[in-house]
Image (cartoon, rainbow, N blue to C red; front, side, top):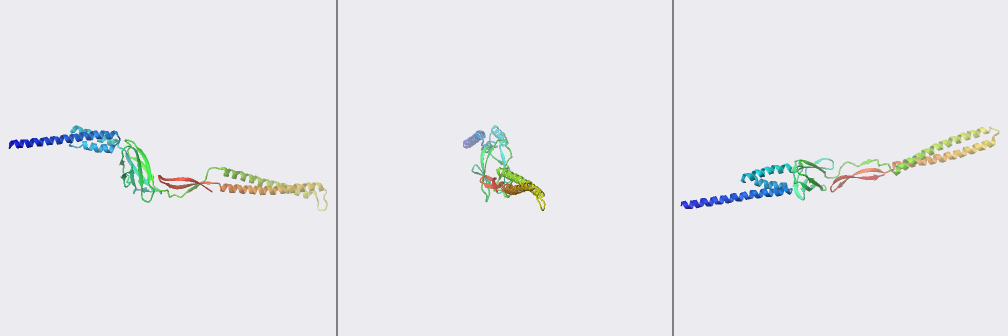
Length: 272
């Protein structure tokens, strides 16, 4: 009977020892896998392996080393705070985000997300709007990096602003200037015509014309100046009016909001 009991105890001890050795091997393997993952930038996977080898059942040295490396990996794990706004500038929370094609979050609540370092493609989707994609490169130890996207076109009205000084405005100024010169010449020739006419009336009296030849000359001057005055007034008025039309029909810049697959923006349009 004693022999049977002793044998059973020996077998149980052997089985327990084998299980312990198997657990030790698992802990060591998890520690080595975590090191490889850490070197490859797979920090989340590395933390999962380190949690295994930091278990209380693992050998003391392995457990302590894995716990130390958990703290080190957590210190360099990048964190990202994502936010979204609509076209009117209001906050959006009902936004589904995927990272590299895999689900990340179903709502944006302002909390920081732990993300492996490297380049990632984020896709933002909300009901009734075109999805937005954004590529980000996250670096180790980059904590609480903030990224804001706008989903949907801005609702602000288009703004019309004066365009840059162009050829048409230059022509408007030239035409208007020539028109003013023409009007000024018309007034000058008109004054000459009135003066010549007054002098022509002085050359001859009511019943006699002692300066007949001079009166003919003065009359001719009055007629020519009157004609020049009329032409100058007409030409000046036409040029001045043309200048006004050219100035007020010069193209202006219209800032038009647009919606695009990668977000909202604006474009410039010439209006008349």
